[in-house]
Image (cartoon, rainbow, N blue to C red):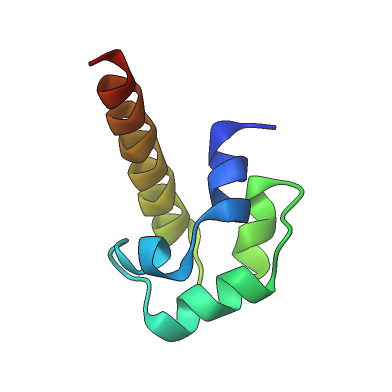
Length: 73
């Protein structure tokens, strides 16, 4: 499973709300639609488009990089 797919299936409500364009209601819809078998499945959630999917991927990559950096310290 890809890191991003894992992020989609495990990110909590507050983490999702940190992403620009995700409201509290949209975070709830994303969580309710889990589990996702593929990243494109997220596009089936009302309110999620390709631009938001791209922002979510960037956010997840940043989170992963920060986790790796802190693990090295």
